[in-house]
Length: 482
Ligand code: 4AD
Ligand code: MG
Image (cartoon, rainbow, N blue to C red; front, side):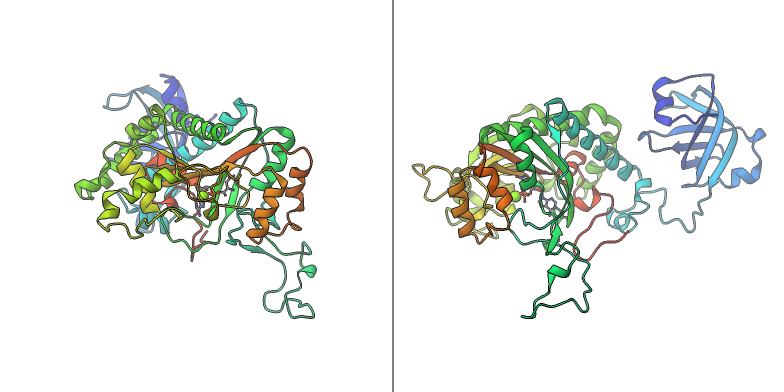
């Protein structure tokens, strides 16, 4: 007999047929009522055990966490909260689960505890909801781009270049660490390494995506990226997934519009397709907020917050305008910022970003035209502008409430001479990036792109508060378990 998924049963309600379901026991009440979940939906199916047909030894084995199958008639439910239930005439136990030893308990356990048990936490309502929403968002990203004629480009994971020029890379080598071959001058001899040169895990697929865009027009990458930055925060991972569209002939404004459209689309998709999961996550967040002081609680429930983002245009302003707001802000005047905003040119800290988004505008914000000196070498240099004291670039960062930077991108410098000058100033090797410079030599065109940190998006949509809780097996300083 074919197993039917619980999501399908709850959708189609094939009442009065015999069905077979399989899943994990969420609860077993009065030696009679099993709440069964198979991961296909946030909702459990009630299985009512027919004692007369099931032997007591089997009943004994129906424990929280056990994997079982149940066969029986699907009938209209007498109980509240569910339309149908199974009257089980047969129970098959696939995997016992000893409650004395099983680390999970049928009660609320802290996220910190569950992080230590990441191999089992999928079994909780919260985490199964998070990972279903994560899936839906990934699917929506692909759908968004496919529907708009973008090509999904798989850029390499092992590379020899530092796309961001920030030097936060993990090396990839097969040389023996204890005794690597040396050159005459005593340096490690990478010519004997696997790739005959030093290589690392990619920090971004952007540079390669630009090459694709110079022929395919509109491309995007969606892959793992790696940063060896020692950031122990609720917003940083050492391994995260990034979505990077790159579009020929787009300028900064097109780029902002694309990012805004995409964020709206994927959030709407989640609202439309993940209702049950978002309800669980919204309740979880409400519960979590109760433990916070009143003034730190969010003003909106999770789904209201998501709808708010879809319904309102993002605020767009330049870095120069933002600095003015921050300089004159109350927290700055009263010395409340840990990093006081003194003037034009300083990099924005997350406390500044959060002030703009959460206190000043109370909306997602797109900041543009940052000083060249705090941004990457490939960003397009702006023309001088009245009231702007220094060189800026056509950069854009999208800041979200509770998250801070969710997107970083720019129009790219397509003018060969300007790009070369900038690379020299920033000590980036033209020789190593000859292939990147070639696109500026042969048929160069204006183009733009951005990177969306996928986990930051999942964090926002699920209302979770730590990025380590929205990726299955988080990698961060000191942790590569599982
Ligand atoms: O701002 P970033 O460093 O930009 C780039 O890598 C560009 N090459 C993107 C592009 O233009 N194609 O990173 C982009 C986004 C950030 O806005 C943030 O959402 C996310 O990636 N991100 C991280 N997410 C989790 N953990 C980290 N350590 C992250 N670093 C960046
Ligand atoms: Mg950035």
